Image 1 (cartoon, rainbow, N blue to C red):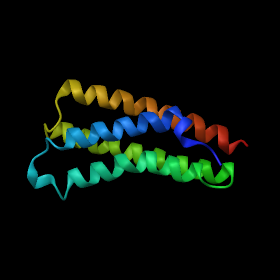
Image 2: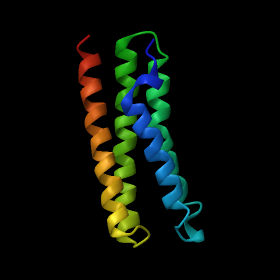
Image 3: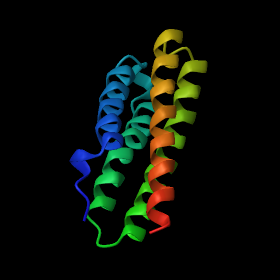
Length: 118
């Protein structure tokens, strides 16, 4: 079992999730059951899967859940691009969030690689 609270990737994913929730508050009300719901589920899935994997018994299981978290952050990235193209997210904020997202993707990939080799 791994202590997810000590993982920088988990801490950063939590901050990103909070940021995504704040950003999505500014979306049009008509997106409440569409893009807002989807983007929030993708965002919260990242730290949630890191946590679930950390609670599993083997490194292989942990790597599997890190892979799911990586898939969720890729999904989130696509949804942010859609929101940006729909002009729901300002240019500067979009680039700030996607830069952080890219760093989290790299961190997840590095952890997956590490734990798959164990």
